[in-house]
Image (cartoon, rainbow, N blue to C red; front, side):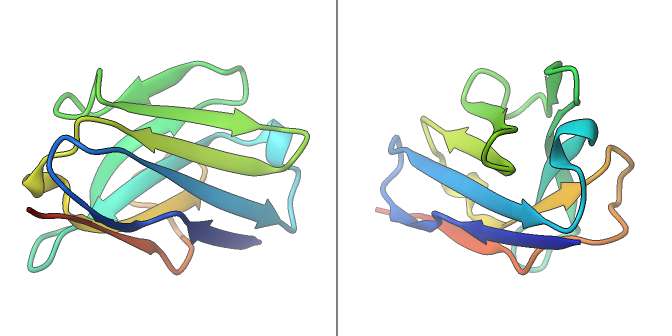
Length: 115
């Protein structure tokens, strides 16, 4: 299983980013996928899950601001982050499966929200 996140960066409050997670080594279309994040000094927390059926579920504080999606043809998972807040600052990871905490995840991509 290989998971490679990208798309993070520094953005001002209210801004947007689109994270990507390129996957390989497993049948992406058949698997549920999730995004998790870890802020400095805090525990890992679940952000959003997309099931193989396309059904999605998100943490309350990001619902309506973050959108998880997938492109099965490209074996890629996405997370659109809109209306970013300073408390969204964290390392964001993608992971295979729907069980939290995930058994394995990618190396992460840093999202920093600051003015």
